[in-house]
Length: 244
Image (cartoon, rainbow, N blue to C red; front, top):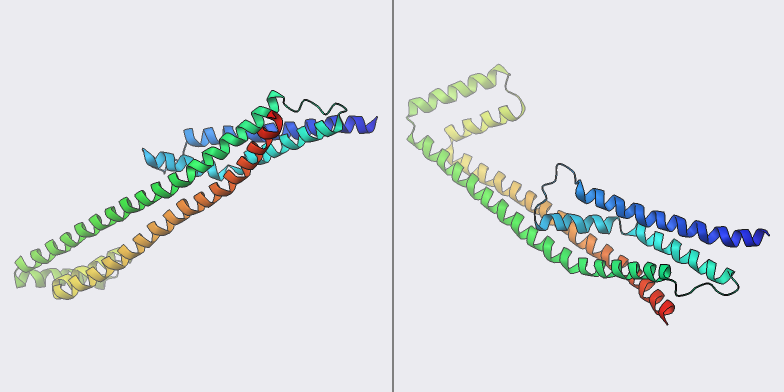
């Protein structure tokens, strides 16, 4: 009696757990896409990039669920005298879902690589435009200093020295005062230092953009390859067996 009960409960438990994993992962994905984090600005292609990344990040859970369902079906087939209904609609639907997800993950691969490369170019262009604006601002400051009289320059330097000596200026305020003093006392050196700092910050931001895009595009694409292979292997192999 016990083997009969086990042969009934084991496939039922596996198929139930598999169905729950599949449905819960789909529900979680829908909520994640409908209610993205508030700090993310998602428009147009950026929303699709976010959606595909979330799908890949959650792609393993449905795969485990499908594996549970397939294992439960296999146990049910081998434990029944007639071998069960090998071509049932449930099995066809399971393998069709696996094949569909495999196709989706295949399509995600080129989309991720192309889209992340486009966004990288856009972000780098934006950084370049911001740097140009800052350089123009520095040039404007130098022109304003040239237009000031010597007495006015000395007056401003005295005011800055007095505030620095008071000890009340700290952190960013102190750094700005020191830069302003350098601008007044040695505009050429100020321009060189500002340009040096600007290029360092530009390189840092460009590296951050490149690293972020590599992590987003390449990592997601590699994960998509693995998921696509797994889903297609299960889906196509299963469909060939149940439909023949």
